[in-house]
Length: 276
Image (cartoon, rainbow, N blue to C red; front, side, top):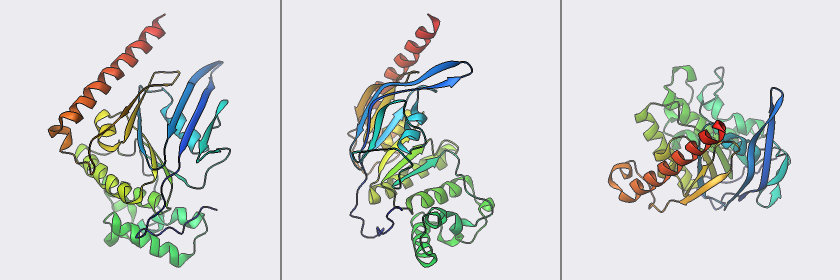
């Protein structure tokens, strides 16, 4: 059972390291194999925020699923803090594009869901959910029906549910993609604020280059199928990050143009490969 004793006020733990070693993975589509990942190698130190970008179908979500123990690589190994992942790790949580809240549970009960599954007592669950609803600024909606919340508020409930479990690795698959532009910007900064306090390791999948640059310590660019890392860019923007950096920072613009050019090259190469 996962350890759930970390206090949000006295956070001394950090994230876990994640390592992909010589991953080759394929799946069957119809009557033929499709190569999803090929010679995929990646090393993520504890507490680093890494975004993964690349063309659709390049294996980004497959890599996340392997980290979460939902998919086993056909060859190679994925390791968490040095130990090979052979089942669903207890210190890893997912945050998806859709909030996946349960409509028959109110806000507090949704936040407590993961804690309940892991066997935490009712009083401690209540304390933890109250702490996190306060941190995402939804304490006044604790007893509300989630169907009455805006999409942005629902996503904040999902973030509270995820982080209330004190994960040491958070796997995020386009978690803000369903939001409008203004709400998305707010949620990005809100999540950064919470991450900087807790410091889990984050693997973040996105198609938005600006989002990747704003949030991350590193941005990985993957080639089109079969997926492999073709660029690994360290983002040296100072923290805390703000939305204004998109406009005011020449360094931000430089990263954007670099990654945009590399992404266009990757897409062009994939199209030429398919045309052969």
